[in-house]
Image 1 (cartoon, rainbow, N blue to C red):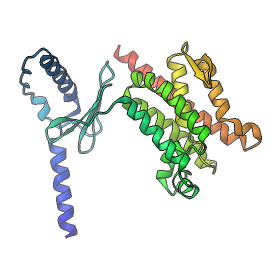
Image 2: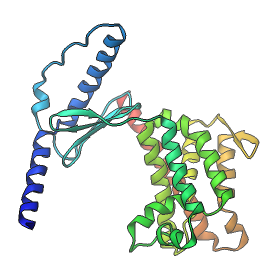
Image 3: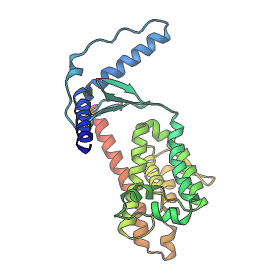
Image 4: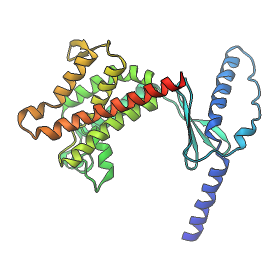
Length: 279
């Protein structure tokens, strides 16, 4: 029985690998879908899809293609994945398939829901899953959402919803989620190395840092006080670092709060370089 299962898995993997469309065909698929949408809106039947010999070519694993409008596609191990700022397609079995879509606000709601669960769950569940430890890799990820009090939850939630939509528009939904999770995991990693509980606001600080770099002249309200994006970032770091001013091991706290800002700065520099090269 194990041999049969292994053979079935191997055959399925081989079929997926051989039939997935290459990432470089993603742009043609997006252009076709947009044209078909315009034709349907005008009351005409969509033009039949043109055959493309390039689609029959198998792309190399790990290849990533980017376009000036921010869309991208990648050849993963068994499937291809492509995203625009409005949604994503999955390439499998010779075709690009539209993934289920939902409003962009739901992405922010999903992030807030994980923070809410961390704040409301019992202490045993919290320390079992949200306290980062090297022997339990999932705690490093969940540590990025480890809010522990109602104040932290309101603070993170209000900032997330205030800055989330502008950054989703600038980075795309996938890019924003990657920034939030990446900055949160960076803070969680520092907390793990320092052997302390994760703060859970690394993603928030990463978002604030990116917002300050992207829109330095923008205004932001913190607890009813309106200020520029850069002073707002300094205020957010100060709020997050209040434990350091109370004698609670200041260096690990400051390092955990600065790490997300470095992730945001690296992401901004990479985005700016890519925009310059494609302009």
